[in-house]
Image 1 (cartoon, rainbow, N blue to C red):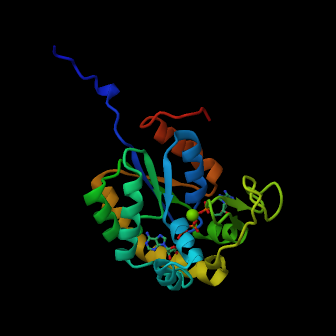
Image 2 (cartoon, protein in one colour):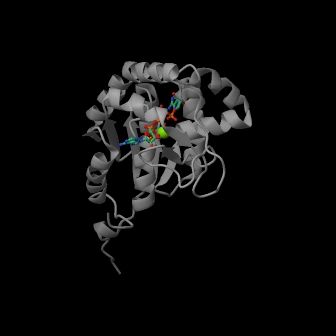
Image 3 (cartoon, rainbow, N blue to C red):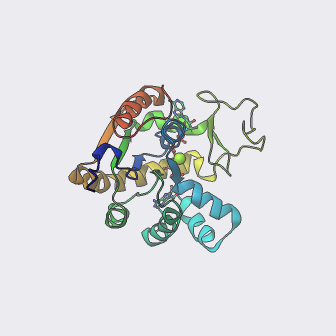
Length: 228
Ligand code: AP5
Ligand code: MG
């Protein structure tokens, strides 16, 4: 017997990338995407920091670049992310912090073409102030801010009760270098995704203003778990 396949019933894996300068709110918006759309979140910076804290060979190599505000070489990043993506086969996912160069984007596109690229466009002067107040839970990557999103108890993660840290690359000098690195590398990356036709830019100064627009954009592409 012939059975017609209904296009709405076809389940396809949804793959997204979030781009933006250091401190633009990628991690903060990603947490909300995970909460409301159930995507698996893979943050390249969190993965690298975990390697650094465990003092793996990759961590020792990456540390030199991270603490100087430079990018870790493409070849190391592509291997690291490819291995992690293998573990997520069949799941919807969101990549935060990768790709970071046009070369990384082209490699990813050849292996695992993404459906959407969310580009956060936040002015640099807003960012420098934000990073000063950031506190991170290293094991999970959960992010807090002393004013915007404070933990219930200062210096302590709400979920695990473990101590929060300030990232080694969050001092003003390294932040300045990270912003310079971003400015020097982002244009070809953005151009690549524009040429593929999947880039959506969200300009703004405030995460709470940008977030409803990201939510509306995603909710016509993937079913939300909850209502905003
Ligand atoms: P990574 O960890 O990815 O850092 P980044 O891109 O510099 O971005 P951040 O994590 O600093 O910022 P975010 O956009 O996530 O902002 P957040 O939501 O935390 O990478 C670190 C390093 O690893 C790189 O420099 C590089 O060396 C290396 N690396 C990583 N990936 C690589 C790759 N693919 N290739 C090569 N090298 C790679 O927000 C910032 C703060 O602001 C938070 O405290 C938040 O609570 C707060 N905040 C958010 N919104 C607001 C608001 N509206 N008002 C006040 N505060 C706010
Ligand atoms: Mg981040």
